[in-house]
Length: 392
Image 1 (cartoon, rainbow, N blue to C red):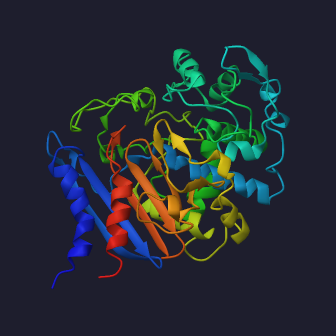
Image 2 (cartoon, rainbow, N blue to C red):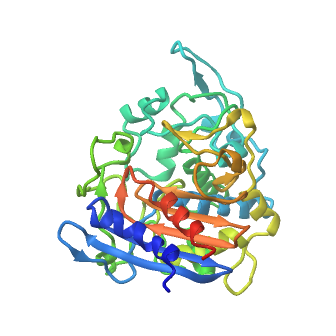
């Protein structure tokens, strides 16, 4: 008799593709390092009904962040960086930051530390967070521009006030972009080169980088949704539909000078499986260690005091989650709003990509689609389907 609980995993993809809400979805779930559930459903272009290419390439947006954070942890292990170091020691433009007060005056900011960058407590914001006055200033100043170098992008960030005093609250932000620039300054070469040397080559990644290799553009999945990440919080009413989105200005695929710390990478399901295995273990697939066990523990241990929870992006709260140096961490099962485990961790991307690591069940889960600003919690829905299917 077929396992109907297991079939519910693919049913999640079928539901949204058949309804015309998402175009194509790929997923992989590993247990004990082995494939347990894997599949693909839908189209490259759900309007034209063109098939998904072989080994599709996705814009993974904020699933870039854990990779850059792990890269920074490598520098900590090498003694080139420390969590307690002040940011201004490396980037002096952040030495005299101000905090915007509710009455539009400013006050001197406390020093931003490297830990604040890892944990999104530096006081920065994002252009799409329109409920934040600093986010509004970023947007008016056209801070997001894919044609700007990472160095110039970060220098521009330093000209704006902070949304709050460093260390006092969790606020999703461009902090990992600043961390990426910090890595460039310490190692004195572009982030693209550093990432290739420290991550892509050791892990054997074939299609992960800040641009797509020449001749492989046909594998890039068509993007739907909002035309800019700045508009991802502006959701239309009614059922989600496939709206083609041209995002090349903010997220180019053929610019060798483009790089960011908090977004910008392209990747495939196969490549990100290797990334996720590394983020869970600190090792290459052959067992060679790239990060120590203690560094991996620090990546995925909640560092937020209860007073700074629940974490939220806009009006969406992440019930039960705290934040480590690498991403979200389930620290309070009693506050969870989906099936999960204590210590489950990971993150997602703005264009409907998602991954999670579960040390209790020894699970790695990855979901890939391309819809910028989707209202559908596709990753969380896959997680729920996976957990309810673990015991037939």
